Length: 334
Image 1 (cartoon, rainbow, N blue to C red):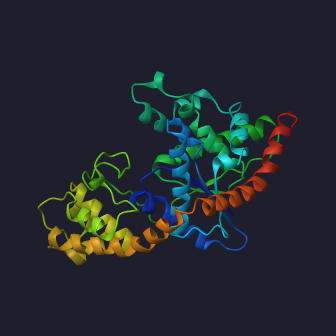
Image 2: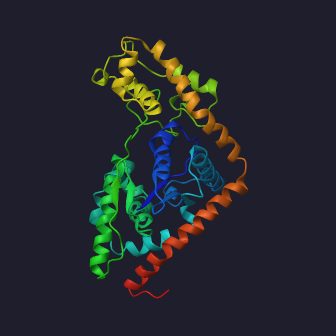
């Protein structure tokens, strides 16, 4: 079993990043047996579809590496690297561009959502983004890929590309990856708007819990989080039509390992004046050790680069046989 997952390196890492992806990665790593392997990468080549200054991109990659290690990713047990250090990703992407079809990419709903009405102004990189995702997966012959709802379509595309390449060139080169649906797929919403995802791009810092927030800041943000005047129900069904309440109780449930029904039962009939301090304390106790380790790691650029270089060397060695076989299947000489 070979698991692969990537995350875009962005600034202002927040609770949504941690609960939505990073914590599940740590669990997968810890559950792996000696015959299995996890590849976790920072998708800095994907990040170029949005303009960003050189120094900021470098900082974001290092910060994301620090966050992953602080949260529990062990570079000795998992392969942790950034995409740009492993050229095989870009090389295989170009080869697969000959296999992928425009009609397939035209059906990608995420592209449509991101460009809106400005399709002509979108970068080509954003359009072929799913082909690079396919290359990310196929170059390692990953058997399993953790996916959320918004990425299922891209994994299906990777399987389609793999099948067509294998068929076109009469080889059994690429493994068709299967999805892993996380046991707890947390979708963390804004503290100011329960219908919008928690995001670093939100102009209000009060909308998110940053991994760099101190204890007081966390408590203050939870205290001021948007809610409604109704008491908490005794079961999850009672949260229907209450997006902010649903979000806060969902965060508590995810952090505590309880079901939303169990959280509702514990706080049934109480107001948010009683619930918010409990949520704030739980957040503080959960994030404090991660923040402390993160702040320590992010000041040592040399150590972070060494971790990424070590991971890239392992990743390159794993990718080389597949890349070489793809060139050979197509009659390309390297």
